[in-house]
Image 1 (cartoon, helix red, strand yellow):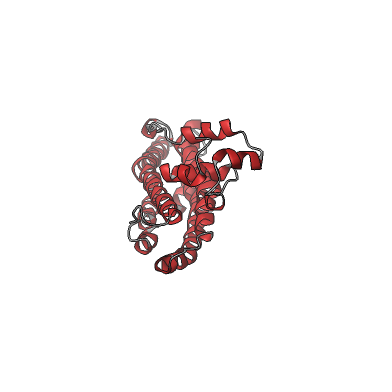
Image 2 (spheres, rainbow, N blue to C red; image 1 turned 90 degrees about the vertical axis):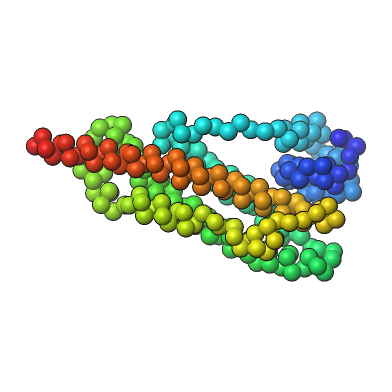
Length: 245
């Protein structure tokens, strides 16, 4: 791999573009240089870069999150939020921002993506922080109340303010966040004759959408049902305490 050009490494596997990016190698700026040349230029260990590139071809096993309590599921979701906001979205934004098509047929797509993607990022970040500050905080309070078996009067007041069913409905309405981007890219349709840069952009956008679908499924199919069960159990406990009095 050392003697391969950067453009060839990325063409072999589009995920390699993101690996190189985290080493400070933007493939579109070094496309005609070999990996060895770029590593020497940047003072990087070629062996380390190759090791990380080889890792990118592996597959991660799915974690069965349904067996975990809500506090660990929320930690998992917060971590994925962090990865989206700090790594994936900035990388894709840089890819789109740096795309200067050398053919007029891509000018419209480039212009639309440069306008729409920052709006998508802004909306996504707002949604994430709102979700963590409201929904996640409330569910963690439910979990804490049951785990410690006290604070029922405090949680009762919070239950009057929050509605998990309302959160679930609003969440489902927010799920298809990339509809506009799919439309611009014609569902990420491209072929081998398209510029490598646009193929990498489309591949990253499609991968992002798949990850967002999985993320939403964890919230809709695992977190919300568990949170509703917590809420119902607390209601039963409060009711039994009232009856005892």
